[in-house]
Image (cartoon, rainbow, N blue to C red; front, side):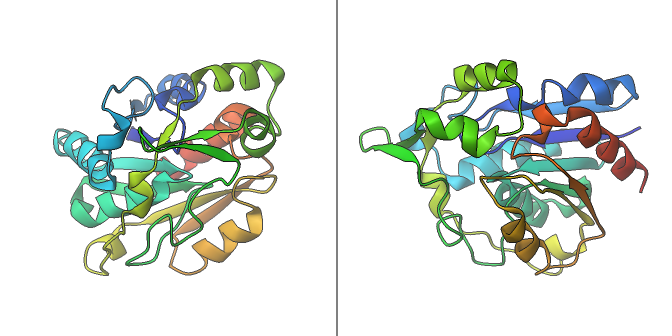
Length: 234
């Protein structure tokens, strides 16, 4: 059995994995879901949150685990898990991108588009807040009303400083970690054409496809879990 470490995307928290976690645990896997600094239940002031804060948080958790894990990043956290793989490649058995950004060496999220445009900016706190109408159409367009209500209640303003953090990736470290991409064909936040363009730029061991929106952990939780179980056996 495997240990999965889950990293959420922008505006979100570890709560996005609430459906997937029990399904994986039922199959004997261990699941660790992380709240990044300034997100979810983490109380770090958003104006103090940087990309390094993100990667430090994940790296510290992996350093405390005595075996390699399956590290999973959603959306924005494709950059986070990529950088962590550069730092601690021996701690990662598989690197999984769930409709996530795939950066090239030296790129930041700003370089790749800078995140959703339907937001309002808070200068004092250095955060972006999603415009309410965009949440359902951009992130949850295939989800149930119940999931939409839950997600809207849980989403928080997103610290913006991490968006300018550039990844530093090398063939010797990041390049030797086996990578898998799970694409979502009905995604409005990162359209499928964009996903495919990104993941074709570097080698991936496997790719999986789900007819889902940007939140397959809600709209297609069982299918996503099935693929994660398969990845654990690859």
